[in-house]
Image (cartoon, rainbow, N blue to C red; front, side, top):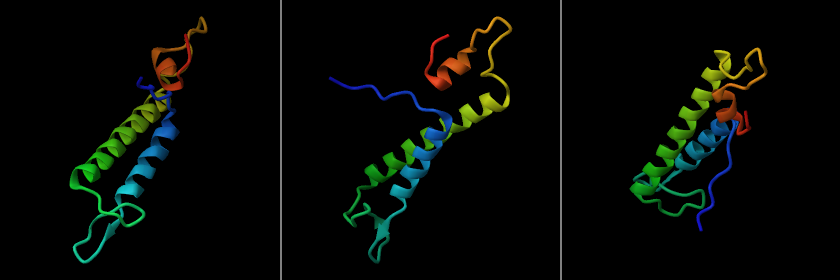
Length: 93
């Protein structure tokens, strides 16, 4: 059975993007091919996938920051949380 990931906050997405980009930044040898932290070769496809995952997390972090800065996560006068607040914080309305 596949386990779904838990909801992440904007800062958590940002940190994950940084972590993935750091992981993708290792190169080795004369040819400067991508390698793991342990120096093992990384296939071009695996390297591209790390960068793509980092981009997704960075985009989600930007969306969260934009929604928060724009006031989209505040509650309405009746105390109902906005759809953005629910989506960003994994809570219920």
